[in-house]
Image 1 (cartoon, rainbow, N blue to C red):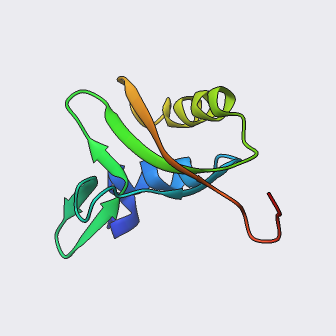
Image 2 (cartoon, rainbow, N blue to C red):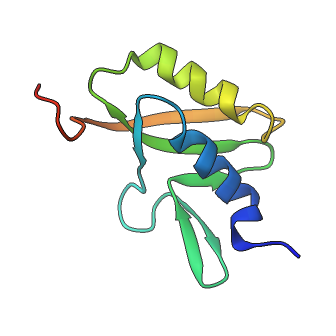
Length: 98
């Protein structure tokens, strides 16, 4: 029996959030970027045919190119097509000072 976290959008979200330097997924304007599932949505992930988009908030100290490359690498086993990464915002992690 599958669980709600078995949906490909959930797998993408979990893999992206595990990448160092990624603070959060970003949904854009309300409801703009999400995968809608029965009774819920996965914010910041848009599944495409083929591939996907992920919209993220990065730690302000994270190297942009390296972090987006790591996101694509983390998704390679899950998404067998192009992955488009959009950095929507940067933020300071708790406990950090800019």
